[in-house]
Amino acid sequence: MKHLKLQLAGLTLALAACGIENAVLAPPPNIYSTGTNYPTNSVPVVLRTVTPRIFYVTDRAPEKTGTGGLTYGSERSEAMAFGAAQVRFGASDWPDLVARTHVDGRRNLSDLSVESVEEIVRFRAVPLATSRTEGELIFDPAEKADYDSRGVAFQEAIRKEIARTGNRRILVFTHGVRNDFDRSITSLANIWHYVGRGSIPVAFAWPAGNGGPLGYFRDREAGDFSVFHAKEFLRLLAEMPEVEDIDIVAHSRGTDVMAKALRELVIYHRGRGKPPKTSMKTGTLILAAADLDTGVVRQRLQAERFSEAFEQINIYINPADAALRLSSILTNVPRLGSATSDVLSPENIQRLGKSELVHFIRVENISGRGHSYFRSNPAVLSDIVLALRTRAFPGGTLRPLERGDDGFWQLHPNYPLERLPDLVDTFISGSER
Image (cartoon, rainbow, N blue to C red; front, side, top):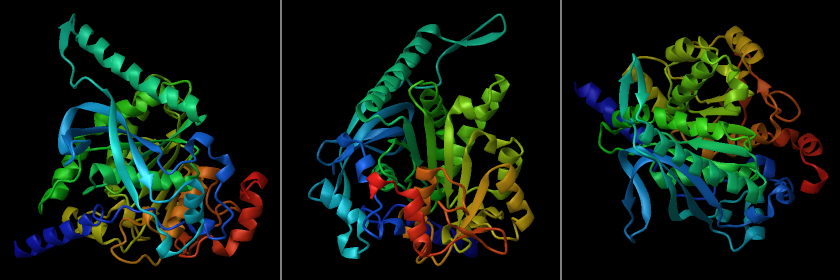
């Protein structure tokens, strides 16, 4: 019992690292170290600002901040909400922010904060009332019409943002455990900014952040609570003719929330006789530090041909991830985000990459606990940027990763600096230099 308590305490401390860092502009990706590669001229004029809006969908219960503003806590809400958070990058103006984006120096890190939150649409709470007619269970017509009207309002808000920016691609981010609402917004703001602001950013913020030694397990249950809302959110986006593609970045236990929602959508569209990829409009899926049971992944995702719904799936792993190591101890099952060749053989990795377009990328020489590297490691950020901007697979000119003897792609700390001249010639257009 004493040993178990120590494990629980260790797990709490390790996973707490997911949400207690100061909110700052992450260190610039290595690809921007030359001072020339950020696609400034490709950023829509209306988005060349240090105070952009980051959209969100959440089933966290609303709360008031100390100053009377709106935020969302760790309590659950049966009604999904859509809104916009205005963030502020700590730069004097857009040129100053671009300069900070290019310079790799700790003194140049910029503050990044959530200034205000505005709720735009509040959905009707679910489940809706039902009645049984001739053996068929149907929703109450009035409640269903009301729920659908909120969905139309959500789509209209996204439609206006598409018209305002010209961006038809959606970038979705889902956080892990121990993250509060603001952290989900600033994490997405970091990724969205570095990728080049060529998409509409929407955070899916589920009710994580439960405290105490059992907070991790409460967060896991909260993730299951949020699957239906995540599925509805993705469905409403995909049904919009104006939306071109939906890219998804998920971290830690957020990978489970998204994987379950996406799996149900895959099954739904196959049941309709429709190809999941075209129906869901899903593009690139990125799973970082995935707190997923490797056996469940094989039996519930791989067995369902889950990867068919995506252009590619990139899975970043760190075998030394302290949080996932402790999660593995408690569940007695290896976690996907810390997988090794004992779990995934070179032959299996090669087959998954070739037939299912699933790429395993091992992040090397990570300092600290090594769980939140997706938003703090310049090499990882570089590869995420390249994957989302170029749509390229690993191993080519546009994503010059090297494959290790164990089959995993290797992400060195200085990636892709050794190939940066070739990358610049191929990747950066004349207007972006």
